[in-house]
Length: 419
Image (cartoon, rainbow, N blue to C red; front, top):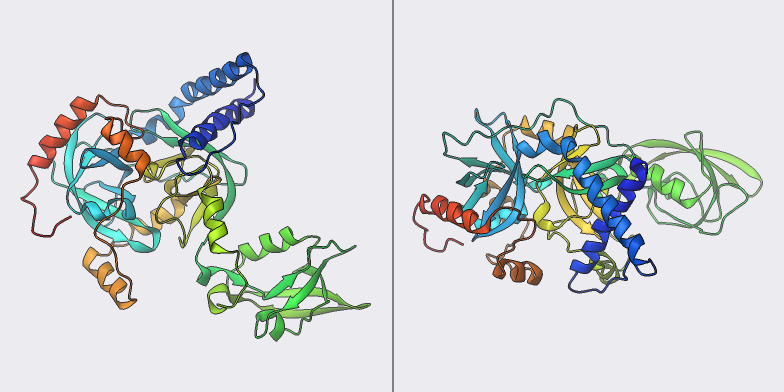
């Protein structure tokens, strides 16, 4: 069986496990209708692929650590070199660790445990850098010199600290911003009924870029910058690639007359009256078959994948099939959406000094944003922790707990009102 078939089988197993893991929505059994020997063959193929692909993530795994709080793993971390420190630091997901304050324990791929503190934050990307005071930590920084090109359909893998493949998937959307302020806005409602040529415009939003350029309801867009438009998805995909302020030439037909107009695209954030997909319905759809990250949107630069992960898997490095670093997993958005910050963005961030926690809190206060000092534990994770099986933990638990306790004992006394 070829590599594509093996990947498909392994991905099927992963998605099935996530469907079973969802505690709010019951998902259909993807194996329904298969005979027992067909199920066994698929599972064997997936297991074989995961074993065969271990060498691919071997180097990345050396730079992957587990981050614990109160005895349970809360996320992964990636060891990196930053311009703000002469020693390696640990890059991880900020929203997963911020309520743990300075009570964090890092477990290396070799099984060493030590206390860590937050050195700084990149709030726009929901990333934090962790520092530590251990002379013999012997952490191996990730090699970011060769970034993997993340093209549509590329297979990618997540590294586990124990050297195995934690998860796999394919790139479904190339790098883009999820912030409204970075999304280009034309200001039209397109008719879903397919025309013989082009895309009919059902409505033009008042004051929008399209209205300012003279487009009217009933016009049929034929091309944008000499690229023919034959369907709604083509138009939406093109707009996703553009930035607010970009100028495009729209070729269109009004009646039997063909015309052209220059359009300066606006920003989605400047148009609060835009019809949106109902948020309640969107939440229900995103919850189906997946446990989502608390912070899962508004990233300035992410690649989207169908890779099935848990929120506690964020912070781990992602590689391509050649072992080159594709980025760092930052959020689980829905059953079919996992977001990855690409290597090129990570490299640029690490050349800049991170913000202090106090600065971030002050900026939030200016915007009137308040944060709770407590967070309800996911019921699934609570059960796992009480059973002594934190999600994804593959080390000896008793030995883990002993090392974590030793690291915690080295921390300074807990301050008043500290979480």
